[in-house]
Amino acid sequence: MLNYNSPIKNHINYNDISVKEVSQIMKLNLRGKKREFFTAVGKHLDMILPTEANTSSSSSQLTSIWLSPDEWMVVSNELIEKNTNKYDLEENLYSSISKTNLGAVVDVTDQFVMLELEGSKIYELFSCGSPFDFNEFRYKKGYSAQTLLNNIDVIVHNKGENLVN
Image (spheres, one colour):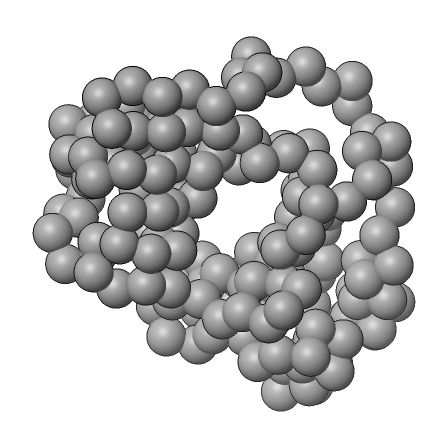
């Protein structure tokens, strides 16, 4: 695992917006199209990957976010040990999907930073820096969007009316 030092040491609260980093979260990128791919993933994740654009599905331990017709990001809902980047789930998925040429499994834990934003003005903040229209998005729990936020590629996952990752 990378030696990662976050600039956000604790919660930042400003003008009814709270920002905190959600570190120690496993993030996997899955790609595949074959029926066998969906069967293998469902067996290991114990959930069905979302097939509708800009949606997500969740279980008690994992959340999968639709990124494209053949791509998903799977994130853990629980914190993991910080000193390791070995995940049993990744190894199991890699063995049953990548090694059998059904698709691809890539650990992107150290590639993406996850922030949790909470407050009544988060969508106003997003509207100032993004071309995406958040008017309907804000009321659709479980929806996700890939957009630019101040020229930075972001994936926004709606976890509630005033809570996003």
